[in-house]
Length: 305
Image 1 (tube, rainbow, N blue to C red):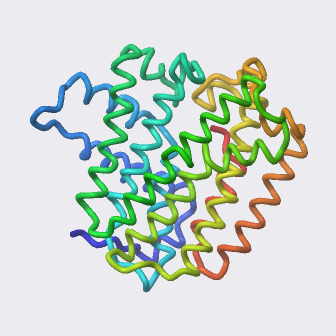
Image 2 (cartoon, rainbow, N blue to C red):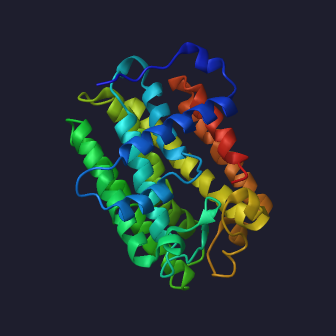
């Protein structure tokens, strides 16, 4: 197994170039993960690659890698399979969320959505295949079953899928329109997978041992804040952003009666809420001496896509 090591000079590299380098490395690994093989229909592989390799932030696999780094002397394992697995789960969720029966989007990452390009049937199957490929990667790479359990809980009925169900209920006017309801939904719909990325990175780095409890708790608390900040900025971009920058349609949340942070709190109070969460995340992560995780908070807070 290839061990995961960081060079000390990377800590002095400006964050934008560091991020670009990591994206390139992640993209190269994702391409390898979907290489042709026996029994793999080429049309299915093409649809999976279309969405998986579309230009994206690669935030979730990056979180896995940075959490592994934060484990420092506790680590030494290879986090790459976990990093690829979470991006596959994320992209599966995007393909399904974009379907006409869900959010009904025709643009994602600056490209036509998977169902627009390949039809609804193949898009659904491409999402299904990415989801199962993710767990195959984890099962093949790690002896500790906790990694598969971690990702399944984050992605399943009590996590991302459950959050999406409640988001649809909010859109249909079937739930209370309050900050508590909004954050409960997004702690699952968006936040559960983000938190899982950090715990997976720590578990992968330490596998087959268990990471120290205080490290897991700090990474999880950081992930909780980051997930909410990400959702707030996503909601703000729908109001203030441009499609050319965001890579997807804007001003669609209000038209669909979605409960959002700016719709509930207003733009300025939403920005203040995001800034407060960033400071909370910085405090909780400080003892781990993880400067890249701190820099990532600023990146997410000020992102334009």
